[in-house]
Length: 481
Image (cartoon, rainbow, N blue to C red; front, side, top):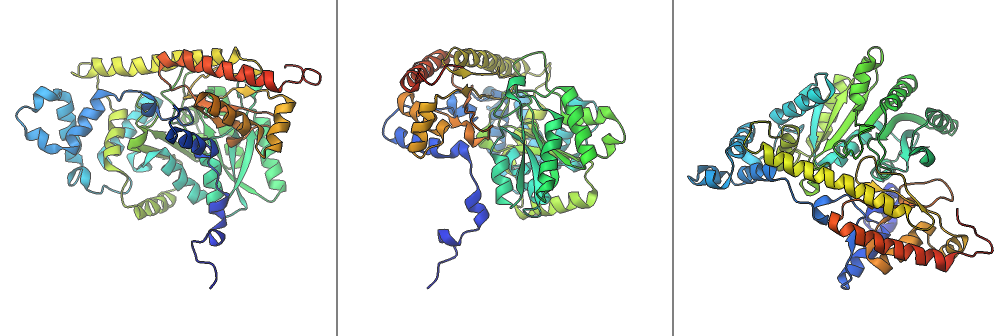
């Protein structure tokens, strides 16, 4: 009898090609050590609540009432829940057909899509059409839906920033496409040079690849930079001239830790540019409840908005969404609450502002503590985290460490991160999991550990790193950079 369909040898080769470093070798080893009783600090994934961030009160109150609507009939409900939370829960229940346990439209509840459209209109200064907004189980599902529509085979390429969030490389591999890397420049604070984009497209075309789309991650993951308005204009002009659809991953738009470069959406810049670009460039923008000061990763709420996508294509995307019947309904309500939070004068407004500001201000301080901590270490350099949730320091590994790593069958930064994990319990992701220039090594860590724990974590990292460098530096052949 030959191999069975689900024997490893018989699996779809695209499945085997998929790599996802955020939950890769380091994470698996960290989980093993945790089972053995070692204290592990999981900084490998942007999962705020797992690292102690408290949920915002108002959205949890509203969703609790929607999940248990019989509480709304209790005469004492007003003693436990604020009146605006009660009113909002009743509002969302009227938008559903059967409460949270019933399927919604495959695009999401129409009333919540309308709230998302109103949020986008307020943010960008241009109206948004709810019919072009699809609610999804986190932004990742939306990205996968759109890439599935774009990629027809291995001859189709997608421009992806390197370093990149491995959702993109993994999904492109899964769907049988080709990743076309464009490198961000670390010495220019992870800036983007349009000339590099042109070279990347030319090289791909010379290899027979049709480049069909470009991804931007703004603010950046893992690099933490915020794209300027001028940069976004260059990108949009490039997409117009090269006839590319732009995928705008904007899930960290609330996570801004400096005042010089605020978040600006690709859609706003596109609309500001006017015709012909504003009615020609195809753009799909993504957002989520998992990041920002919400951090509701486990709820799996997201959306994408389509700009300049033909109606027949929208119908096809709707058809594909219908295969899954319905996005997660409680998450849709979280999304509605994120885009339509308490307003001045509402009973819950002051508490909501106090909680959300407290989270963002603490993240801003943690970003500075972590950047300064890395830059105080031997052979480590780190750009400031302008936005998102991560630091991405460069680790300048001595040649002896690289040699020992290769003899052990490890990529050098994986070797370093495993040593760090064993010594300190800090679980990170090697830079090789995101892509990096040849001979350059990084790691990614979140800035999410509790603020009060951050100094001790950075002290622990510094002690490990400096001892590692001392062990592997060969002063006869290596000088510190």
